[in-house]
Length: 629
Image (cartoon, rainbow, N blue to C red):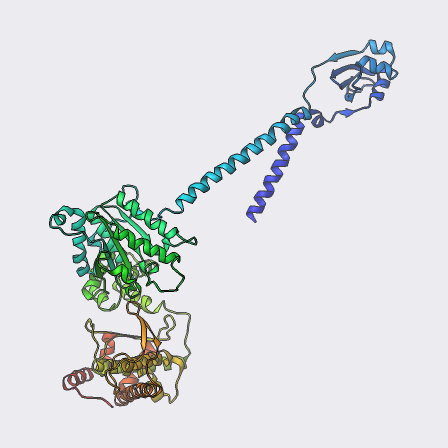
């Protein structure tokens, strides 16, 4: 609407301007002068009413005498082209004596409207066409420039004196100490290449950074460039690919040509798996754009001279999809793994992200690190930012430990759904469900430590039990898997025991338990079927995603797999039910507190469970006793 109103006002102003121009060119229109015929002029001359006549070409201005107390007036008229004014008056019947006595003043003819418009009508089309052709030639020139720049590399350049970007050093990268130590040699190569060339050593051409999303692959590459004080060319793999075939290969050539002119330097290709996937026969043909781009990258990396000081960094979280030609020696010589940080790494990362934030004296970053196993550097950065936002929303001057701990749950499960009010029945079911999970996790050996139990809705969950491992683990045993199964079925077993009825609240638990039980049989070889892996599967270990792609077993074996999966589930349910029956009073106590307070922290939960149960749990860990199997 604003655009339409602006256009309307512009049109109105244009009409007003045109009217003003015509009024200026024809001032008589503004003055309202009466126009009379030449015959009327002759009659007025014969009646001796005319005092003076001003003639400008064929235009006449007649000034009348004042009579009968009336003021003098004037009018305009036009004479014929042929003959003089006197001749025209006499010809029309004017008295010769009267005509000879008239005061006739001849003036220079003023330019009329057409006198202005005619030259303009000749010049204006020439100007318009000239402007039009100028615009066409300018656009054609720009299009030609764009055609050539279309094939150039759109890489972002940092450290060239123009675009410094974010100044990142090794001090800004934490949680990947082993990767930092390994990559420092690359910095040494770039700073002092002659030291290695004298020994006949070749500077590594490519460094492949492999790790889950958010572990700092791009950050580490920027740190290397800044520590080496060399230009850093950054480009995503998807930026090479365009609609037209050959553009990607041309951009690769342009990128490496620019890099060689600025050596020593670093070329960083993020998400290289988008253009470096395994080439397949018959999949789009040899002229396929992505394949041509990959071939050009391989050719450019092979073309580096021995003393070339250009190092190619690439990052991916899917190394299993990369073409083997990329991974052979001479191309990406080094592969550096960036794993999720351990507890010390998470604490160091939190310290880096908290540097510019006002923290309260009660903040314990170690506790936050203990509660965030599996968090990447990006997750921790998001956690600290959410805590700062929460503190600002509460009108606080500093960030407290409370905001940091609440942000963990927000990152894991989503924000609190305060508007989602549970009915008394739903609240009771949710309380007993979560109390069942927490109780079994606290009683059974080889389980994780309960840090918090809540029936406050977050995200899609009506309630949750926050249980975290006591120690960092890389390997899990069968007994730990079985304990995890029992904990997962704790809510289901509690609803069945207390209410003698089931709800949809256990659906997610059952899904996880079924997937884990089948993995024990088909993936880990922990069932009666023996140490055999069933089915070919495609996995993305860094993303935690896996699916079976091919079935390589018979129908009988499939039936045995189903039977073993069912056995694991049934045994876990029996174990969970036995614990709940033995600890029924404790279960009731936890559920009542949950219904009343909605949230139970670790310290209060341990009091509710009781010291005896904790000692009993520790004694069972040492003796290896079983519960309700």
